Length: 592
Ligand code: B12
Image 1 (cartoon, helix red, strand yellow):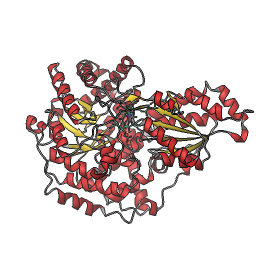
Image 2 (cartoon, protein in one colour; image 1 turned 60 degrees about the vertical axis):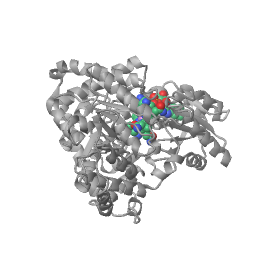
Image 3 (cartoon, helix red, strand yellow; image 1 turned 120 degrees about the vertical axis):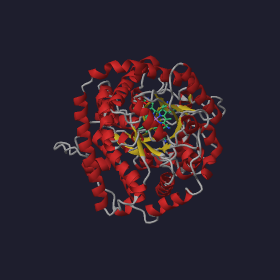
Image 4 (cartoon, rainbow, N blue to C red; image 1 turned 180 degrees about the vertical axis):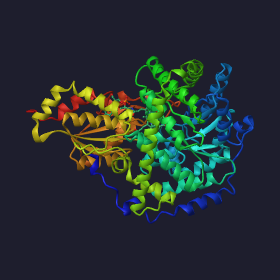
């Protein structure tokens, strides 16, 4: 019943200790006097001052640009990988226009805290010269998206990237959703981000502020109208209030070709700054490599056709088919790039077969819904006393409100009389698919459901939390548990182990269920067990998601499976929902 959600009080939305946005922007502009945009290999090769200029020029020729994501833990290995991808592809007639560098989440902390931070699966840069090594690895444009803007280390990272000559910096979407372990100072995060935006806006060349919508609230709204509305809100904050150009990316959660193309058409109507890339529909990657090639073709064909009809400067992003099991290696990146170029050659013949008026009709619905959502959010914030001309204050208030409350209060859909929930104007695919998955699983759980019903007042209680930003596993597990009829305690998202355990204790949970994806599964499992021991909590522990970790003595920087080690600790390593069944049976009273 989402309608029970209310806007946080003005005291919760705002923070008297935060410096006003105009002072933060001034501080960023002042830094720009000494921190000027460096020259990259891309600039030397293209003769252009920025990637935005390159995107406009290349887009005008009709060529579809290609993006590759890369980022091994080691800088040297990443540099070699970039060269190898660019050169091997070029020899095969494939142009990789840009590389997105996957920084490690520890890079999100301010410089002085990084050495002590836990590490995930991405690249760790030790000093500013590391940025320069990456930027000069080859003549493709380099894009630094994740763990730059939107996190407490925003200013340190943005300075280093600008000095190295990077002209596409993100990821604003992360500002709204990401939480680094043991970091709760959202005021410092906002101040660092807005100051970095001032630094970007004050450069002579156009530096794109990148936002991956799916990383932010847009990936969590059930209504795609709200996702488009979030793009409009971000555009207002970045372009109108800070003066920097905002470039959008979307794609992870857009599974069906119709809504993918319609979102593209709609986005183009609300943002004319060149887009960074259209991200792969990676949530569709579930199976073996061969099957994932079908998913790759499915989303790329839609993206290529949409870009041909509405050139926006976005590059396509052929995600390697191994991506759902681990971080892809160089050969796998090359294969995906070659696949994409070949598909571009085939795709031209499909162009006339699409029903464009239907796509345009959905785009119109999205734009109408998005504009209403954006207007209502801004009006709601203003009515709550938020200064919507102050980028810092507005960003913080939106972040603190959260996607569920924003959608419930300001969503463009009508309210269903029977449930009190909003009916989405265009329902998000990820939610529909996970609902169906949970329903299907429940049809196999008759015996367990019968025993839970027989338990009466002593139904088991499960506390569900995530170690990181990935929330869909939690959503699915909760849908499944609620269908079973067990009691659920919200353990939180990106929650520190001791806080998860504290919530489990407060909710008197019999089981803690963790969904983890960031390559820290074993470490997180042990930390939860230590926190349970510390407070004497005797409860089952289920670990699901991506159960891997990079060994400290790894040469490859690739994560390895830690299922066996997790099982050895006494926790249940879960491949799927079936693995919950026995654990829930175990905590049911014998008579049930
Ligand atoms: C969607 C997604 C995102 C979204 C998350 C949106 C959101 N708010 O939830 C966004 C775009 C934000 C994102 C961000 C990142 N992601 Co991501 N993401 C994915 C993706 C595509 C799908 C994961 C997912 O939600 N699946 C849906 C679930 C329901 O399905 P499932 O995973 O198959 O789960 C099954 C079981 O595991 C089980 N399950 C899951 N949890 C649990 C728990 C219990 C208790 C039980 C019983 C069962 C269970 O349920 C399912 C049914 O069987 C995967 C790749 C992939 N295709 O899997 C990468 C992936 C998980 N991401 C990855 C990474 C690295 C990141 C980033 C760090 C990287 C980056 N720079 O982009 C950031 C995260 C930053 C951070 N601080 O955490 C890596 C993890 C690498 C690794 N560990 O080897 C993956 C594998 C992609 C890759 N190969 O690089 N991501």
